[in-house]
Length: 458
Image (cartoon, rainbow, N blue to C red; front, side):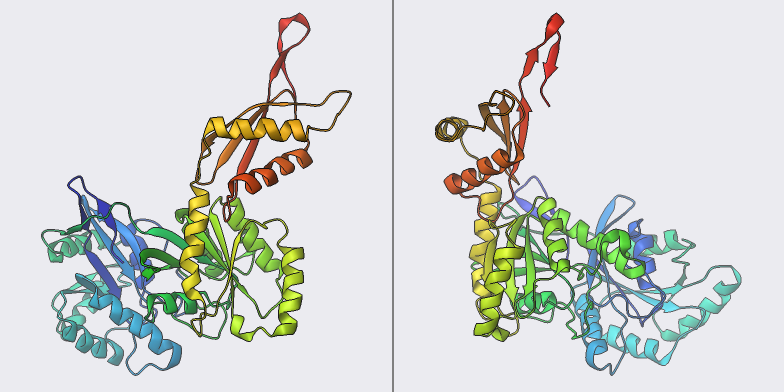
């Protein structure tokens, strides 16, 4: 997906798109990391780590463009490999330029030759990249790739950076001379992160919403490794959905591919405005689900909890699920909840209103006068309990920020944690904030102690 960059003339400039394709394990993701200048694409010696088409922002000599990493392409692929190959072909169809990566040490294979035929049918500019040329001797081997009929092979070492400058210069020459200009909307699509443990149906939901096989779906848990984003029209509005890797472990406990996938998921969550947390309604709410919910709440994003696979829930399971929700989700009773089935499409149209509700709460600002009028009535009706012979009072409150809503209470002394939770609960009852975390900070008033020096409570 190309990056939309704001421009001053009520239009948007769409950056050129570069698709990086090739058979499995030729170093495509390593080359993507070299081009973007940071280790962001997931790299591992095992073939097939990249499964979906994943875009990254890049720049070379002041030119900005989008690089799309793809899974390994193979002809006559079956099952999941076929879905991965289809994603690579979709990336080619939407690209302005294609980087075709070949392992120069192995030389051209039957798969490479089949890929060349597929690339010719696309009628897109193709640059042949001879990867893994780590020394001068291997440059001679790279010349044999002229036989593929794609013109000059560019010898590079994606791992060490050798020859990458010449390749990028050639890439700029092959790009469109002028960027595409499209009409600018008032604001970009709202950003929605799909998060949850493996195999709860995140990729299936994204495909259902996008009405295409946008993400690779497999019954094997953990198919998605990189975040995959799609522009989705839902409820009469375009949203930017990001499907993320299923989180099994805490980031500190993960290793290898899973560690980097966890970092990507956290980054996707940070870039989002609202998180849709998918839970498997047919299974018990697990500790893993709880950890993910805690991570989302701590990120400060608006929250929608979607109980997926509702078509598998019978009357007995509903009874126990109600008990689980009461017990396991009691810390976040304010989250918006919907019951859906990504597989059948049941009630997925309820997602858009739920997301809008959560975002409206996330951006809600209470006028200062109204806030303090309400707070005075609340504290008069239910004052803070007496502690040490006196009861701290709330003098004044402000809301310095939104996204999420943040409140500061100026007081005569520290407040009990229980009373602070009471204030938050009453805030929600009065003003809503359904689907949004809210932050409350307490600032005790400084008092003048002996000798005239200021002394702060707490």
